[in-house]
Image (cartoon, rainbow, N blue to C red):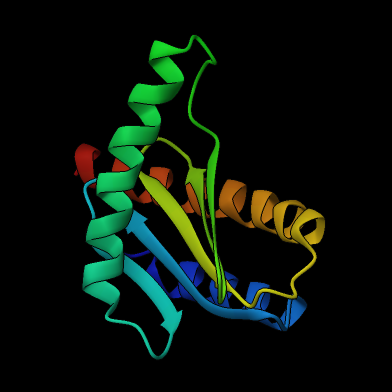
Length: 130
């Protein structure tokens, strides 16, 4: 994907803005890795699990009449996993320490997911036109 370098750059900028992030992944909605800046996780597996969780979240939002999926956050004993819609074709998944400011996480992630969504959607559109 031509936008891969730009997406990776945004993941790295996001991690520099939020030091409590331990990983950042961009994936297609079907679980394929688009770009990643993460260590200590099996990236392909996390992206596949993200796709599965996304499917459940989409269905839950639909069944409860809450509108289009925007984000999903899981709080575990050792930190957070947060997934954000990124355009029509991708998601942004972030791994964070338990001490993160969740409000700041949402603020920064929403901005980054919008940018990543624009990059990926534009790349997909160019590929379809070619």
